[in-house]
Image 1 (tube, helix red, strand yellow):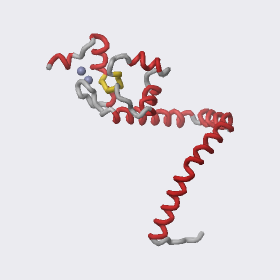
Image 2: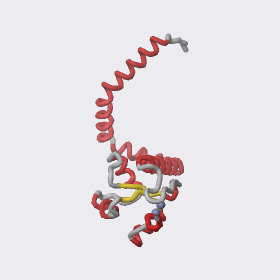
Image 3: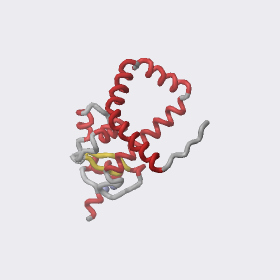
Image 4: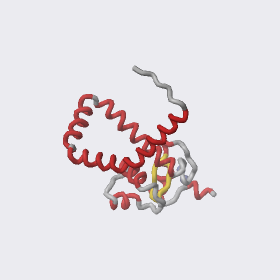
Length: 153
Ligand SMILES: [Zn+2]
Ligand SMILES: [Zn+2]
């Protein structure tokens, strides 16, 4: 094993080169990855299935972590607090359609609530028309059409 010590200047140049390379090859790389996926779809899926079968806990834990991150991304994008009472405990918070037709909209984009809905929000750059509500405010609005927090004022 040879040990080489780069001077700073060389190191920086190497980095710049890598960045430029990355920029120019990113497109190609993506195309290649898609092509590879298309051509090897079955093999890839089979590998995934096998990995899941051999080690379901790992897959499940990864899935749970991924979903938690997705939910946190969405909540952060929308302010991390209930739009009515200001509740900030993430466990109490959920996304709500501002005009109260969340169900209809979710159907119209052919996605149910939960993960797919959060994913849709993230993929669409967190569109306006949605807000965070805590479960208390959400249920009250759903059942009575108002939230008592707003009536106290
Ligand atoms: Zn609330
Ligand atoms: Zn409220």
